[in-house]
Length: 300
Image (cartoon, rainbow, N blue to C red; front, side, top):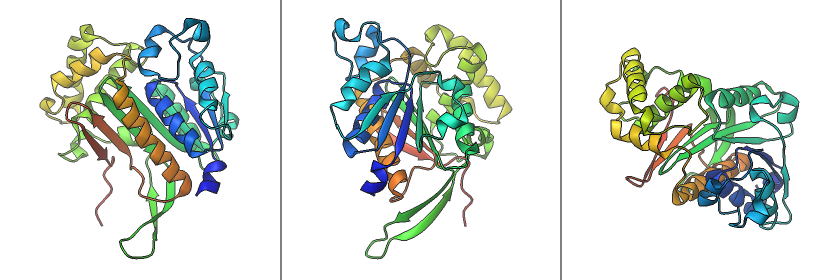
C-alpha cells in the first residue's frame, strides 16, 4: 500500500482551509507528488481558515494561495514533491489531467466540477475524482472512483475482493428527488438548491448573502414542485445558514472534512477498505456525518 501511495500523483484545484487539511494529511502519509492549482492572490480572509498562510503580509503579499501553501507543505515531508500548477481549472485539458491519479476540486462552479469530472472519465487511464466544499459549519464531499476494486476485511476471515461502480457527478445530481430515500439528508437537497442558484445567477461559489434568501426560496419551491419533494425537507433555516456562510469556513469542520478526504484518497490508492459511495455530509449543528449513495444502489 505504501508503495502505491509513493507513486500516486494528486492535483488539488482550489486551495482553502479544507483542502489544505487534506494536503497536510496526504503529504505526511507520503504521497508521490502533490500539485496545487489556485492563482487567486492571498487576501486577509484566507488567514481565518488556512493555517498554512502566515499572518505576515511581507510573506504572503502579492503571492497566490498555491504559491504560499506550496512552500509551507514542503516542510511537512521533504520526500514528497509539492509543486504549483498555474492555470484555470475550468480550462484544463485531457493531456494535463493524464499526469495525475487523483483530482480534488474545491470551491469551483458546478460547471467546472462537471467539466473536470467528465474529463477524468474520458481518459484511458483511471483517474479518481473528488469534490469537497465547506460552507462555514457544513460540508459536502463527492466521490467518483468510476469502477473500483478493493479488499474488504471480514471479521476473522480472509479479505474479500469487492467491486463498486460509481456514477458521474452529472448522473448523481440528475436523479429525480422523488426517487431518493426518505432518509436522504436535508444537506444534500440544500446544496443542490444553492448550487443551482449560483449557476443561474453566474455567481462564484460562496458569493451569496442573506439578501439572496427570497430568490433562493423561490428556487426551492420551483425545484421541489418539479421533483415532487415537500419543501419542508429543505428547511429555510438551513438555507439561511448556507447563504450567510458565503466563503467562510469553520476551521474545526475543515479539519474533519480534510481528515476524511485524506483517508478516502489513501483507501482508493491502496485499494483497501470500504470507500465512500458517493456523497458525505457533515453538519456541526448536530455533529453528525452522513453518507449518501445516489442514485441508490438496487438491493440484491
